[in-house]
Image (cartoon, rainbow, N blue to C red; front, side, top):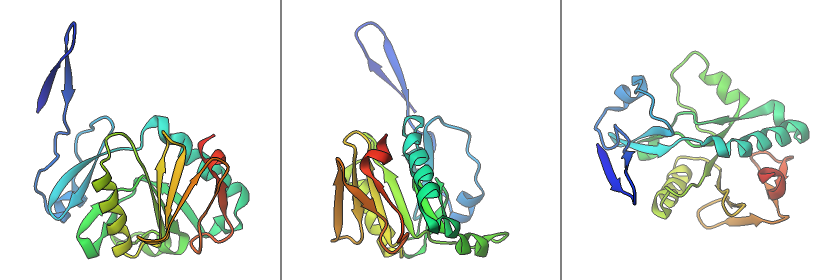
Length: 198
């Protein structure tokens, strides 16, 4: 569907995500190769496709900074990896999400090698953009904890702020010179807000 939005001197064309709201089985979705839509990824929610924003190029620096600090400072880095936009099937809520950044233990990645086995990351990070509603973000946080994920970071680049959810009720807000920690997930690693957003 194409929407025409009038402007002062010309009409601007805005394309909506092509497959948003389409019904599809999980098996079909797992084998589906959609045509490329710039900036769009699809997630699966109980048989319905949902369009979501891909990790934008102007947000890649966050992932880069996290990786650099992790491999430079963490002795634990040989036990796990940060990965972007990997399929994560949340069996308990029957949804397949593609979080912006996940942290997997190496032993879980090895366990899944060569198999179509579902593995749950230790933690997920979502980078909030203007198109994300508060209900959407809150819903994902709850889904992640229901599915056994131990730690959720919600990153706000516009405000240079990180909300770290250790549970639905235990939330730490980091900004300014604050140090963000990874708790039991990566016990020897921390990163300052400044280093994350530099």
